[in-house]
Image 1 (cartoon, rainbow, N blue to C red):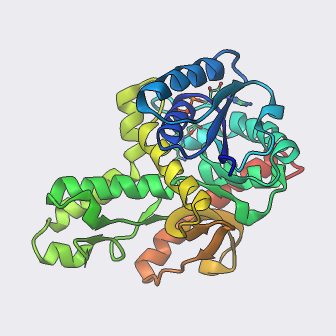
Image 2: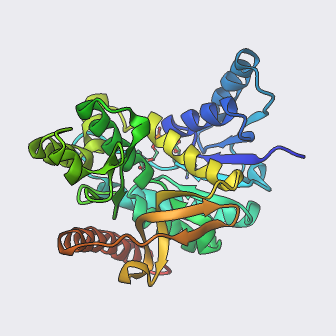
Length: 319
Ligand code: TXD
């Protein structure tokens, strides 16, 4: 059987890391696409040469022409600009909306059967716009943010409690902004929901509160350290987990930005909720029970996403 074809739209820091991980895991042949000439070709060649060391038979190619993504099974979109210190994700909206238009049209023309994972910020608004510009089915266009935010939450919990990251299950819902909603009652350490883990002495309430806050600001913490861009290793790993669930029909339930039509009492927008990803794309949305506090936090986060979508409509009235 032919190998899967994975098109990476944007060959910057995340795009290059995605290409490396996808090739090492032999997830499929990789096309790295970018408007910058030479960058996708150089990265593709570098990783192709590395394949002789890590021993996987996958093809890698750099491209500046959308025709090269033809027939892609998966497209992962990182095209656009990242944050610089002092910028919020929302500051990127004007530039990245134009980029989504070009990318959406390219995918529509050359890879209309692909499963599309958007990573570009501000995430929830950009995936919404990308779905509109591409016209692809809503269950085949999703956004990556929740896997990353939840991974940060899980890592901080592992670091504090000393429990293996493998035995921590953390969930972060809502939009990919500083008002995202780390789900304390639904996240577990060694099977214990976090309030029980506090009662059992794994960590103090003050530690937990600090971790929730650090998770919300996790992206900014890395931007402040790197100074020249934003996180890329953990974002790439997160999108690979989502792509793998689709390509291998794993049916993993992962927090993803998905189109809601009535779930969580919301419609006509993309926001982060747990979704089952299989060979048909988004196959099921899992609705967590929420208490009043969680509902209020979720509503606040959703209001920010709605504000960003409105800003997109103001910039691009055709949306
Ligand atoms: O959780 C999440 N969703 C995120 C999102 C976590 C971290 C970073 N996140 C966002 O991903 C970040 O704010 C950016 O919007 C994207 C990509 O981040 P990356 O760090 O990879 O940015 P780079 O290194 O600047 O790469 C962007 C590439 C660069 O090579 C540009 O030349 C290219 O995008 N680019 C384009 N490619 C194709 N088509 C167009 N129009 C285009 N414009 C720029």
